[in-house]
Image (cartoon, rainbow, N blue to C red):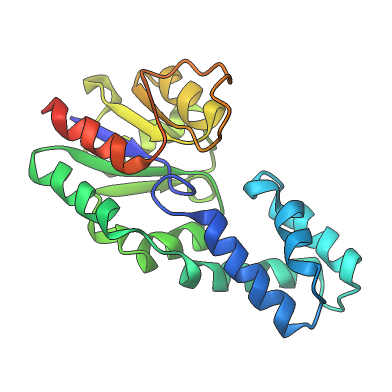
Length: 214
C-alpha cells in the first residue's frame, strides 16, 4: 500500500522553523522588537510566494540586498532549522516495516525542500519524494502525485493514501489523483468543509491510523 505525505506543517513544523529563522534574521540585522511578529504575519503561514515576501521585507526594513539574494540566503538557512519529531520518524519506519511504500509530495523550491528532507532525517525514512520545482508541476495537479508514486517505485493505479494539511493541494489534489485522504487539521475551527476520509489534528495520529489498516 502507498502512503504519500505532504512535507511542510505535516511531517515537519515549518511554522516553528520559520519563527526561528525570523528571530535570527531580525537579530542579525537589528530590525527591532516588532520585526519578528511582522515577518511571521507577512509570511502568512507560507501562503505568500517567497519572492513576493522578500520584496516586501526589503521594502519594509529598507534592506540593501536584492530580494532574490535574501530569498537565496533563506533557502540555504531554513533546512538547518527544520526538525522532525522522533515519533514521526518512528511512525514512518513502522509503516515501511509493515509493508507500506512511503513517499513525500511537496510544493516548493527544489533546494529548500530537499534540504529539509535531508536535514530532518526524513530522507532515510521514505522511499522517495517529488518536489514541484524539480518536476515542473505543482499540487493539486494529479501529475505530481503520479511522479511521487513513481519515485517510490509504485503506481497510483494500485490506490493509496495522501496525508496533508492543505485542503486544496493535499486533500482535493489527492482525491483527484484517486487517493484516499487524511487531513491534518491545524486550526481550532473544524467548520471548514473538507472532503477527507479522515480528519486528525496531528500526523502521528494519521500514522497510527494507517498502521492499523495493515
